[in-house]
Image (tube, rainbow, N blue to C red):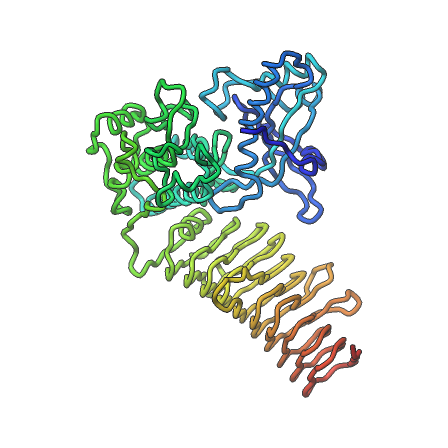
Length: 602
């Protein structure tokens, strides 16, 4: 395999740039991880995780064999970058960017500890006990240490932390959380395998909860340091060694990989052999995932190594308990952990959890963690009720035709977050919710044919933002946004693209904000409709605007603020405004009143 090179433009800026605080999260045999808080040009203060991996100062090695060893080690390390960078999935840790950096001795002393007792075990199979000491060694010898840095999402605690707390297994909310963890794990592995990537070191330490207080879904798979992209030995035609997406182990072109890779407790039997080389495929991850699912659903922490051995090597399937919520849990665990790879489930896409659903799939969330769990496990067509209370976090609705509803008196509040609710699916209904103090947007709509109804939004940068991801075969957008009350929101409703989005019965008010406010901005797409916008308290002196549109649109039955229209085919009907300004042609103004009407023909 040829050495992997990092493009120069990836290493143009130090990860310490604009940093306001630095905290070590952990270290181990593969490097050290820092939490860095920095000033972002748009988002303000943000927290990121940056992994630093010592590479060895190559120019200091004159021996060709040593230099080649160091080059090979760099190549193995850089797999993580190429298998993870800029690839986004809800159940995979997102990698933003990476680069090289020469770290001085002063920086190492200040921010990198050589404590080797950390639980961060990036590569348990390495013959060396640790590489972290190379930071100190190289810097002391050469005055600097060459380092690869990788900036990633900052995650919450790992699954091992959750398992060690001996969670109460009998409550229904705990069973829902267990289901959410297992589904997230499987979806994350599906994502990797569908990209022909084998993780090779799945374990609870490498599965992370989201970056919130407590154990909040979705879980994310991280630490791809041992991952490999699966190709045939003769990679000119890798598909010849694949059968229905699964490696044919009998093929002469099957994958040939180094053995003894991963963490022994979760290592598939076909890897844990004395042969220097071994042929294996995606089933090694399925085996590891099966063991993780078992200990997630059943409290086996005290006897885990022995029970793993007895299940796999002795076939004691009676050790696996049934789960009250997942009907086929035992069947899946046994099938995923077969000692013989040929008898094991051979494709992660075959793994589906059959659940005992609530009547008509109706769930009730009482806190942030339960809401995340419900969003993670629900099926299309489900209903999720939010009890009165505060919900802090960034919530994502991925499914279709789901009703997410809060208390009708706005006692269900999503607050103090960057992006409150993101709607990825289609035909969903979100209603009876209050959003407060969201740093970026309260509701982001990526799907089509969604209904946002009876929403109160306070003191946020953006209220409802529509940025539709265009489907390939069906019409897109047609979102209905109605009965929305916005107070001190910088941009009440922002429609970026799509078509035929409707905004009905919108109230937009200035109270205490010192920013310039815009009620509704139609920035892209076409044929959008505004019907019933009422703006109060807007100030011309602050350059406030009721409606700003640059696309084909209609504005009806609206009062207050200014109307700015740029482009053709804008229709105004029954509008009362302070100022109406139109730059374009093919406009239509009917029964409108304003202190000033300015029309500039293009």
